[in-house]
Length: 491
Image (cartoon, rainbow, N blue to C red):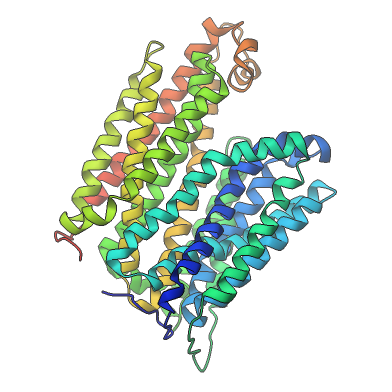
């Protein structure tokens, strides 16, 4: 199935594709660096705005609105064209960045971050959709690989830029830096991206679909936020999310022009791409968070050394993603995924049984294997999910995959945290308190050695539990890919 032009009759000007690619690259960098650069500035923000009690919402507000709006923008882009929706997203994101930098209180900062997320909900999925519109199936894997370098670049330079801006200027500048980038993207799109859009005579919006999707996602993400502190409230929120999901499915089956068309999921291979990307994104957040914790709290290495584990994974992700086009042209995609998932699984099985003498270098090897596997599989998920749906659903399909990746990271981050805390509490002994264990994990190693003989085994047991969870979900996604009915090379 070829998507040379999109569903609304676009005819991209081919000699301006480099302008489009530049705009997409900058937009991808702008939205992806937002997480790494803001994380670096959080201590200064919390201190100056006295926002310790609400610090989690600085990130959660952005994530919530991004997750809710992503599929909505995907559908609107299929109905109204990409250019205007993408421009709208860039404008809102840039405005949210400006207001975040100007915020005098924690409440206004959280509101501004939510506004940023509303813009990012359009920018993040439409970067992939615009690539699908302007490049052939054979070109697309390499173009996506190039665009993925923006993610890797943000992972590498985000903390450095954030630290520099906070140290030399103030935390406000970690938001202001997005303003010139946003203006640049707007100009590039304005002059370089043209499309012929044929609007439908009657534009019908699936309002109830939007409502039930929003309630479902808000319920789910809020439940994850309070899972380890207020379990009964979390159960209630999860129940609301499940009921809303059922109402959403019922609405989409009955509505003529649904927000999330059930027709996309008639292809088992398409559904498997979405599930695989979602689950592997959950695995991704596991090693990004808990490899540095393991190395810092148990091996007493510096934060910089521990952070290089994630960096090595990002580098391999970028390199491996350039292999996708060649691989899917020669081999059946399901077998590519199965082989790579098995290799990743073997590394995590080792971590489940790893003792205190497990070598530091092994973490780098496992991280690099993960980066390689995910760089290939998740890029392949993106290409195939766009290829397996009708041209009129490319935007929606891409937004669903983007939403799945965001939810995979968010949900599993909450699950891992709850598992870690629960196992630590169950294994407290010898007069060791939970706060002492917390200090060992979160403080500099020079301050955390005092009770190491008693605390280290507790932390190690909790980390074993986290990676046991990773092994379980990898086994599940392995079985799901095994059931993929496709047995042919996709051209």
